[in-house]
Image (cartoon, rainbow, N blue to C red):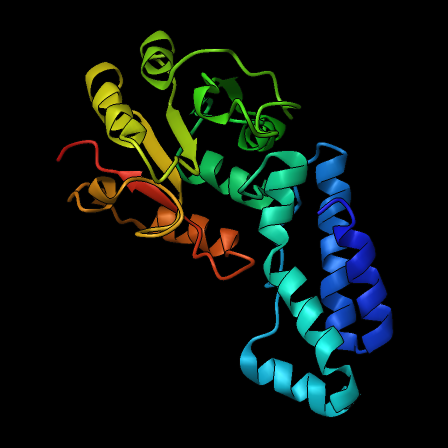
Length: 250
Protein backbone atom coordinates (compact mmCIF):
# COMPACT_ATOMS: atom_id res chain seq x y z
CA UNK A 1 0.00 0.00 0.00
CA UNK A 2 2.94 2.36 0.48
CA UNK A 3 3.44 2.41 -3.30
CA UNK A 4 -0.28 2.88 -3.94
CA UNK A 5 0.00 6.35 -5.47
CA UNK A 6 3.04 5.44 -7.55
CA UNK A 7 1.26 2.43 -9.03
CA UNK A 8 -1.86 4.49 -9.66
CA UNK A 9 0.04 7.22 -11.48
CA UNK A 10 1.98 4.73 -13.59
CA UNK A 11 -1.18 2.92 -14.67
CA UNK A 12 -2.96 6.20 -15.43
CA UNK A 13 -0.12 7.27 -17.71
CA UNK A 14 -0.19 3.90 -19.45
CA UNK A 15 -3.96 4.01 -20.01
CA UNK A 16 -4.03 7.70 -20.93
CA UNK A 17 -7.76 8.41 -20.72
CA UNK A 18 -9.43 11.59 -19.35
CA UNK A 19 -11.96 9.72 -17.18
CA UNK A 20 -9.14 7.81 -15.52
CA UNK A 21 -6.94 10.89 -15.23
CA UNK A 22 -9.69 12.80 -13.40
CA UNK A 23 -10.04 10.08 -10.78
CA UNK A 24 -6.31 9.76 -10.20
CA UNK A 25 -6.06 13.54 -9.81
CA UNK A 26 -8.93 13.43 -7.30
CA UNK A 27 -7.09 10.82 -5.24
CA UNK A 28 -3.87 12.84 -5.34
CA UNK A 29 -5.78 15.89 -4.12
CA UNK A 30 -7.42 13.95 -1.28
CA UNK A 31 -4.08 12.47 -0.26
CA UNK A 32 -2.46 15.91 -0.14
CA UNK A 33 -5.19 17.20 2.19
CA UNK A 34 -5.01 14.19 4.48
CA UNK A 35 -1.22 14.27 4.57
CA UNK A 36 -1.39 17.93 5.59
CA UNK A 37 -3.94 17.12 8.30
CA UNK A 38 -6.65 19.23 6.68
CA UNK A 39 -10.29 18.26 6.06
CA UNK A 40 -11.47 18.36 2.46
CA UNK A 41 -13.46 21.39 1.35
CA UNK A 42 -16.18 19.16 -0.12
CA UNK A 43 -16.95 15.47 -0.41
CA UNK A 44 -14.84 13.65 -3.01
CA UNK A 45 -16.42 12.71 -6.29
CA UNK A 46 -17.17 9.04 -6.81
CA UNK A 47 -14.12 6.89 -7.44
CA UNK A 48 -13.91 3.67 -9.43
CA UNK A 49 -15.37 2.70 -12.79
CA UNK A 50 -18.78 1.04 -12.87
CA UNK A 51 -19.09 -1.91 -15.31
CA UNK A 52 -20.57 0.18 -18.12
CA UNK A 53 -18.00 2.94 -17.58
CA UNK A 54 -15.22 0.37 -17.60
CA UNK A 55 -16.40 -1.01 -20.94
CA UNK A 56 -16.70 2.47 -22.44
CA UNK A 57 -13.13 3.34 -21.45
CA UNK A 58 -11.87 -0.04 -22.65
CA UNK A 59 -13.42 0.50 -26.08
CA UNK A 60 -11.62 3.84 -26.35
CA UNK A 61 -8.19 2.73 -25.09
CA UNK A 62 -8.14 -0.68 -26.77
CA UNK A 63 -8.22 -4.31 -25.54
CA UNK A 64 -4.45 -4.44 -25.04
CA UNK A 65 -4.89 -2.16 -22.01
CA UNK A 66 -7.60 -4.23 -20.32
CA UNK A 67 -5.22 -5.66 -17.73
CA UNK A 68 -3.87 -2.26 -16.77
CA UNK A 69 -7.39 -0.84 -16.60
CA UNK A 70 -8.54 -3.64 -14.29
CA UNK A 71 -5.53 -3.12 -12.04
CA UNK A 72 -6.18 0.60 -11.89
CA UNK A 73 -9.88 0.15 -11.17
CA UNK A 74 -9.02 -2.23 -8.35
CA UNK A 75 -6.78 0.44 -6.81
CA UNK A 76 -9.50 3.07 -7.19
CA UNK A 77 -11.97 0.81 -5.40
CA UNK A 78 -9.51 0.20 -2.56
CA UNK A 79 -8.67 3.81 -1.82
CA UNK A 80 -10.47 3.71 1.54
CA UNK A 81 -8.29 0.77 2.56
CA UNK A 82 -5.21 2.79 1.61
CA UNK A 83 -6.41 5.65 3.81
CA UNK A 84 -6.97 3.29 6.74
CA UNK A 85 -3.56 1.64 6.44
CA UNK A 86 -1.49 4.77 5.82
CA UNK A 87 -3.37 7.40 7.82
CA UNK A 88 -5.55 5.38 10.18
CA UNK A 89 -8.81 6.87 8.90
CA UNK A 90 -11.90 5.27 7.39
CA UNK A 91 -14.02 8.35 6.85
CA UNK A 92 -13.31 11.55 4.92
CA UNK A 93 -15.00 14.52 6.61
CA UNK A 94 -15.35 17.74 4.70
CA UNK A 95 -15.88 21.37 5.62
CA UNK A 96 -19.19 21.67 3.78
CA UNK A 97 -20.72 18.82 5.79
CA UNK A 98 -19.24 20.09 9.05
CA UNK A 99 -20.69 23.54 8.39
CA UNK A 100 -24.12 22.05 7.71
CA UNK A 101 -23.96 20.05 10.94
CA UNK A 102 -23.19 23.26 12.78
CA UNK A 103 -25.84 25.38 11.08
CA UNK A 104 -28.70 22.93 10.60
CA UNK A 105 -28.42 21.28 14.02
CA UNK A 106 -27.41 24.49 15.86
CA UNK A 107 -24.23 23.00 17.27
CA UNK A 108 -21.77 25.10 19.25
CA UNK A 109 -20.05 22.37 21.27
CA UNK A 110 -19.35 18.77 20.34
CA UNK A 111 -17.85 15.54 21.62
CA UNK A 112 -16.37 12.97 19.27
CA UNK A 113 -16.17 9.52 20.84
CA UNK A 114 -14.22 6.51 19.51
CA UNK A 115 -12.46 9.25 17.59
CA UNK A 116 -9.40 7.35 16.36
CA UNK A 117 -7.30 9.99 14.64
CA UNK A 118 -10.07 12.55 15.22
CA UNK A 119 -10.37 13.71 11.62
CA UNK A 120 -14.03 14.61 12.15
CA UNK A 121 -13.07 16.62 15.24
CA UNK A 122 -10.67 18.62 13.12
CA UNK A 123 -13.39 19.38 10.56
CA UNK A 124 -15.91 20.43 13.22
CA UNK A 125 -13.32 22.62 14.94
CA UNK A 126 -12.47 24.35 11.68
CA UNK A 127 -16.05 25.58 11.29
CA UNK A 128 -16.00 27.09 14.77
CA UNK A 129 -17.37 24.32 16.97
CA UNK A 130 -15.69 23.76 20.33
CA UNK A 131 -14.76 20.08 20.20
CA UNK A 132 -13.68 17.49 22.75
CA UNK A 133 -12.21 14.38 21.15
CA UNK A 134 -11.91 11.08 23.01
CA UNK A 135 -10.98 7.45 22.40
CA UNK A 136 -9.76 4.59 24.57
CA UNK A 137 -7.97 3.13 21.50
CA UNK A 138 -8.29 -0.34 23.02
CA UNK A 139 -9.54 -1.84 19.76
CA UNK A 140 -6.82 -0.22 17.65
CA UNK A 141 -3.57 -1.01 19.43
CA UNK A 142 -2.24 -2.95 16.44
CA UNK A 143 -3.23 -0.43 13.76
CA UNK A 144 -2.20 3.07 12.78
CA UNK A 145 -5.51 4.48 14.01
CA UNK A 146 -4.75 6.99 16.74
CA UNK A 147 -1.02 6.95 16.02
CA UNK A 148 -0.99 10.44 14.54
CA UNK A 149 -4.20 12.30 15.39
CA UNK A 150 -5.44 15.27 13.39
CA UNK A 151 -6.80 16.80 16.59
CA UNK A 152 -5.88 16.28 20.28
CA UNK A 153 -7.49 13.09 21.61
CA UNK A 154 -8.19 12.47 25.28
CA UNK A 155 -7.77 8.87 26.43
CA UNK A 156 -11.29 8.16 27.63
CA UNK A 157 -13.86 5.42 26.94
CA UNK A 158 -17.06 6.53 25.23
CA UNK A 159 -19.42 6.19 28.19
CA UNK A 160 -17.08 8.10 30.50
CA UNK A 161 -16.58 10.79 27.87
CA UNK A 162 -20.33 11.28 27.46
CA UNK A 163 -20.68 11.57 31.23
CA UNK A 164 -17.77 14.00 31.54
CA UNK A 165 -18.85 16.24 28.65
CA UNK A 166 -22.58 16.05 29.31
CA UNK A 167 -23.29 19.66 28.32
CA UNK A 168 -22.28 19.47 24.64
CA UNK A 169 -24.81 20.03 21.83
CA UNK A 170 -23.55 17.10 19.79
CA UNK A 171 -22.07 13.65 20.32
CA UNK A 172 -20.51 12.21 17.16
CA UNK A 173 -19.27 8.69 16.51
CA UNK A 174 -17.68 7.89 13.16
CA UNK A 175 -17.22 4.32 11.96
CA UNK A 176 -18.08 2.48 15.13
CA UNK A 177 -16.74 -1.10 14.85
CA UNK A 178 -19.08 -3.73 13.42
CA UNK A 179 -18.21 -6.05 16.30
CA UNK A 180 -18.97 -5.79 20.00
CA UNK A 181 -21.65 -3.54 21.43
CA UNK A 182 -19.85 -0.23 21.82
CA UNK A 183 -22.53 1.51 19.77
CA UNK A 184 -25.35 0.21 21.98
CA UNK A 185 -23.44 1.22 25.09
CA UNK A 186 -22.91 4.66 23.57
CA UNK A 187 -26.63 5.15 23.01
CA UNK A 188 -27.35 4.01 26.58
CA UNK A 189 -24.78 6.44 28.04
CA UNK A 190 -26.08 9.29 25.90
CA UNK A 191 -29.65 8.52 26.92
CA UNK A 192 -28.56 8.58 30.56
CA UNK A 193 -26.29 11.63 30.65
CA UNK A 194 -27.19 13.96 27.76
CA UNK A 195 -30.37 12.84 25.96
CA UNK A 196 -31.32 16.32 24.79
CA UNK A 197 -28.29 16.76 22.53
CA UNK A 198 -27.84 15.42 19.00
CA UNK A 199 -26.29 11.96 18.69
CA UNK A 200 -24.87 11.25 15.24
CA UNK A 201 -23.26 8.11 13.87
CA UNK A 202 -21.30 8.17 10.61
CA UNK A 203 -21.27 4.78 8.94
CA UNK A 204 -22.93 2.28 6.64
CA UNK A 205 -26.27 0.73 7.51
CA UNK A 206 -26.13 -3.07 7.73
CA UNK A 207 -22.61 -2.97 6.35
CA UNK A 208 -19.10 -1.92 7.28
CA UNK A 209 -19.89 -0.25 10.60
CA UNK A 210 -21.82 -0.77 13.83
CA UNK A 211 -23.30 -3.93 15.29
CA UNK A 212 -26.25 -5.76 13.69
CA UNK A 213 -28.26 -5.09 16.85
CA UNK A 214 -27.70 -1.36 16.43
CA UNK A 215 -29.27 -1.32 12.97
CA UNK A 216 -32.26 -3.38 14.09
CA UNK A 217 -33.45 -0.73 16.53
CA UNK A 218 -36.29 1.68 15.84
CA UNK A 219 -34.39 4.76 16.96
CA UNK A 220 -33.29 6.51 13.78
CA UNK A 221 -34.48 10.04 13.14
CA UNK A 222 -35.43 11.48 9.76
CA UNK A 223 -35.34 15.20 9.05
CA UNK A 224 -34.83 17.70 6.25
CA UNK A 225 -31.68 18.89 8.03
CA UNK A 226 -30.24 15.37 8.04
CA UNK A 227 -31.11 14.91 4.37
CA UNK A 228 -29.19 18.07 3.52
CA UNK A 229 -26.21 16.97 5.61
CA UNK A 230 -26.15 13.59 3.88
CA UNK A 231 -26.46 15.17 0.45
CA UNK A 232 -23.20 16.99 1.17
CA UNK A 233 -21.41 13.83 2.33
CA UNK A 234 -22.03 11.44 -0.59
CA UNK A 235 -19.83 8.39 -0.32
CA UNK A 236 -16.93 8.16 -2.77
CA UNK A 237 -16.95 4.37 -3.14
CA UNK A 238 -19.14 1.26 -2.91
CA UNK A 239 -19.62 1.79 0.84
CA UNK A 240 -22.84 3.73 1.36
CA UNK A 241 -21.53 6.02 4.09
CA UNK A 242 -24.13 8.28 5.69
CA UNK A 243 -24.86 10.28 8.82
CA UNK A 244 -27.50 8.75 11.10
CA UNK A 245 -29.19 10.54 13.98
CA UNK A 246 -30.68 8.82 17.02
CA UNK A 247 -34.09 9.97 18.22
CA UNK A 248 -34.05 11.86 21.51
CA UNK A 249 -36.95 9.70 22.63
CA UNK A 250 -37.55 6.11 21.55
